[in-house]
Image 1 (cartoon, rainbow, N blue to C red):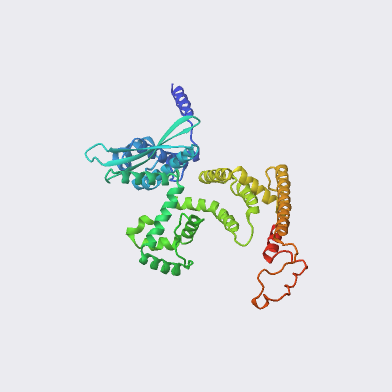
Image 2: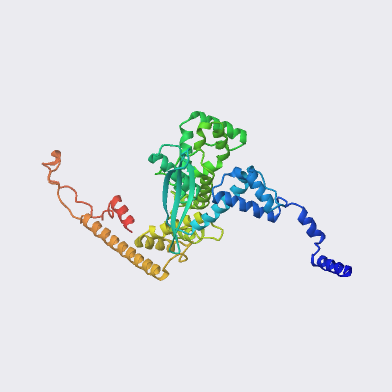
Length: 429
């Protein structure tokens, strides 16, 4: 019986699998903060806080700590600050980027706002911003912003919140970015103290000492020059506004500055061509067709690295340039480019039609020259009097009793028209 008991004990001991040394250490050591398992649990807790709207301080409560110690004994719960400053913002940015990619697939958007009051005794007012759009003929909706809104529920305040959301979320942003830059320039132009401080900051930061530029509707390229000057003076401008707390609202937001930089990448080469075509000392009409071809085919060509905003800007500009000129205007541009020895027929849409048009215009010009020469000769013959002799009808009083007649007029042919007539014939030729 003793032998049987010992055999049973040995068989039960053999049924227990002995862990390896590495497995034994893993069971005793806690999860490190940078371990994959710890990151998974951190993300799950942050998701629970955000999805179920649980207060962040819950992670420091004794009951939650007991729960985590029992279920995951090797996991050490991070502090409340870790979730509020690190994990939740990281989750928000990731989700925001994912929603932004989905929004970029749409073309047209509808946006709604909703004002509501939180439940409970506090009753704080909030405002939310929801966007609606179509992707593959499926209606999509995303609540993109919810903010504390203690201001009066007036149209101006709601409109300002709406514009800020569109600017932050990169929806239809170009007008907003340009408007924010214009508002900044106006703030400096109306304050001599800011302009003086700007010169001091420019000198201290070794920035070119130039004034900000205000765009003018009637001046070509003035908006591009305003944006370019702001980017050049951005560091000095920020230094000036940093010392004046009441003027912080003048500074464009980071999203606006990013939009301005993308817009300048497209406008700068277009501005150079505009200046080249605005010459007063040489004919530039013949270069218009080659310049347009280069802008449409090269500068406004969509590239793989282009952002969604850049692609949209290029599409709008290209569509405008392609539909800007009438058929007759394009015909003139083709003809002038064809007769320019620098370009010849390299930029004609229809080379055969351009050649025929050139022959037709040359024939008309030759016909007009022939008619002008004939008209000039007819005018000359009609204005030249024939040679003749006559007696002066009213002789001088001293000679009225004289029997001598006035000498006959010269029979020599007069000069071929006056100087003015000869000039007209030269011009007609």
